[in-house]
Length: 188
Image 1 (tube, rainbow, N blue to C red):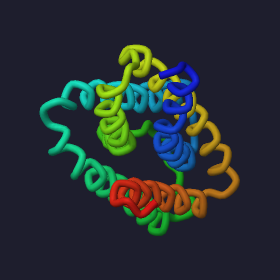
Image 2: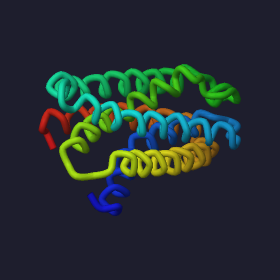
Image 3: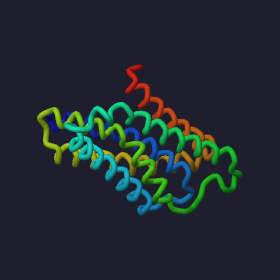
Image 4: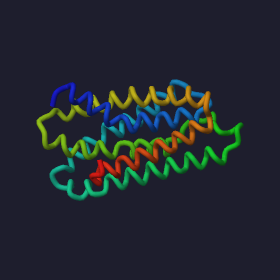
């Protein structure tokens, strides 16, 4: 697989993480370098780990993982999206954006949910002639860069649009879940 194909694959895989990072940025009143790097690093770590896991499991367990990976991603993203919308609707104007750090548990759930498709990519990487370390590095770097940018862009949007941006962020997470589900069900 060429380096350009790997870069495009990395960008494609990081699109879900970018959208989730946008949603995180929308919710934050204060965004600092630590938050931006934390979101980027956690999402990049999950996006890097999942292809390795998929590659390792490709020979023996692919028939078990492939039928349910889309349901897992759909469930996690929908749950997080619905929760984000619920919080936006029930929050008062003064507390619709918090100033604390994103919880590590929630960040990891988002990282897992947005990287499920990378597991399937790992399975396919085991079947083509490509360097797994090179692919993982490209995927991780693309995810790190796009997730960090997503937090910053989401924060800018949130400063101007607050509650509608939070609701839109939740809807985006739900839409990503549906997209993953429909892609795997063959609707697209």
